[in-house]
Length: 70
Image (tube, rainbow, N blue to C red; front, side, top):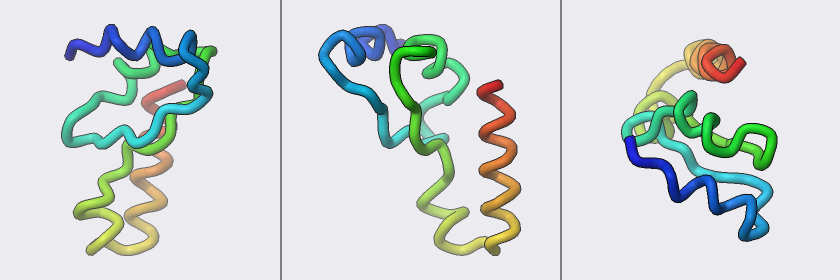
């Protein structure tokens, strides 16, 4: 994925990057570009997971997403 433009966001004054949707961006790859420079928010499937699945499934997805960024 071509995320090179994200490297410029912190220099432009952005302290956070939102939204990161799992259908179109990889949170691990995104973190490579802004690690230590900005907060990444999102990467939870708002379209399906948060709309139709249980709270427990959403919690599990959030934990898995956090695990991808460690």
